[in-house]
Each structure stands twice: as structure tokens, then as C-alpha cells.
Image (tube, rainbow, N blue to C red; front, side):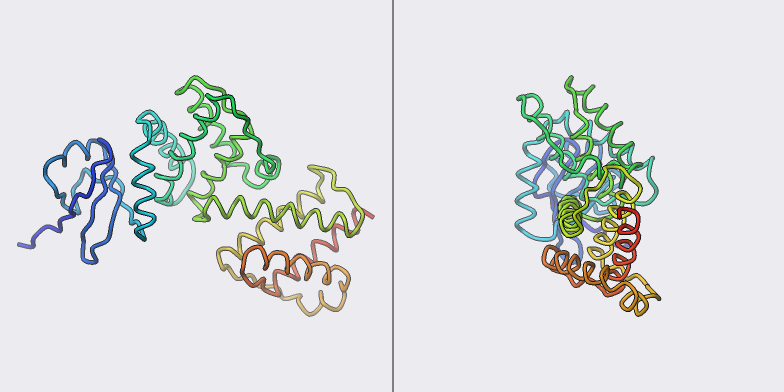
Length: 284
């Protein structure tokens, strides 16, 4: 009979959270499961296929291990409970498997948000309108999550914070880290500002031309971050026929490359040029 694979318990963080090490490669894990921490106290080990383990994910390096261990020790049990409810709601509202990192990133965010609101600190989100337009379904889910947080902690969660929660919802299903989503929003704003200054135009917030361009820039950035290739059969035509727009698209591409540290494919440059062509003819 095959011996069960054992994980060595490194630390019991709470009744539902354990840090352990083991397996074939001696990896370090966070184990989550109802009552799992209480069950393994004093035992020192847990079987890798123990049915009480509901979630298990790897910590990639020692710095990450120490950071998460410190965070989880400080989590308010009430935060952990409401986070679990929110994650369950996300998983039933959106298709696909959730990124395991949400089990640490979301409670950390909620705990800091509760602290800020209880201490009268303003939450200002410069990307709120863009977030609502780019991620409508995720924003709807985040609004529900905000209501759950408000009720659990008897606080008012403002709409600006709903925008930040939206990033966590989207990150959980897209595997794009929250930090990269925030960075992408900042880059989109930079690009739009460059276009407005260059063409001496002012975008009407929420207008069709503004929304189309903003969404395209956003999706273009995401494709670049995820190394997703896009086919553009009109590359040569765009270079020849849309010279002004192509030159501006190249300039915007350089900004994107500098900010992301990634090469912007020529196909993406030409798609941006196409959208600029449409924009220029609807704003002139």
C-alpha cells in the first residue's frame, strides 16, 4: 500500500489557515479549510490529500512566505469570514477557476479598507469611471461585495472603493495582478492625455469615441501584459494610408513599452492607429 504524502505543518495561522511544507519538491503551501488549523494542532503533519483541505496554493519564494505569514497573523477573523463569503459569491457569479492569490490579496485589502474608513480616511479612485466602463460585470459583483462589507462592519463603503474591489474581482478570474491593473489604468490616462494635447481636443467623458478608444487601449495593454498575440492583416495598408495616425500610435507604443518594460507588437500599433483614425474624424 502506498504511503500517504505528508506535509509538515510550519505554522497554524488560525482555525481555517495553516502554512505547511512538503511534497515531492519540498514546496511551501498555504492550506485553507474549515477547522483545519484546529485539527492539526499538536500533530505536526497533515496528509496532502486530506479532505479538509479546501484550497492549497504554493508560495514561490521565502520573501513571499514571510510577507504572507505576517499578513495572515494580523487578519481580523471577521475579515477572513466576510472574505470567504465574497469569494464564494465571485466563484458562483463568474466562470472559471479563481486565482488562488485572491485568498490572501482580498482579505488584506478589505482589512486595510475597513481601517481607513473607521478612521475617517478618504478613499479617492481616479480610475472609477474607466473601471465602471471596462469591467461592468465585475463592478456589479464588487458593489455586492461592498454591501456585504458595509453590513458586516457597520460602515459605509463608498463607490470609489467599489472601483478598487472591482480590480480584485477581475484579477481573480483574469490572472492579471491587481498592481498591473492599476498600472494599466494609469497608462491609459497618460495615453489619452497625450492624444488630447497633440490634437488639441477634449474628450467628452462617456462619449462613444472616448469609450471606444479607452476600451481598446485598455485591452491592448492587457494583451501585452499577458503576452497574447493578435493578428492584424491590415498592417501594411495602415502604415501607408494612415501615416499621421500611425506616427501617433508609434509614439503611444513607446510610452507603453517604457512603462511596461515589454515590446509592443506592430499589430497592436496598427490597431491603435485605426482607432485614432476613427477618433480624429469624429472629433474634427
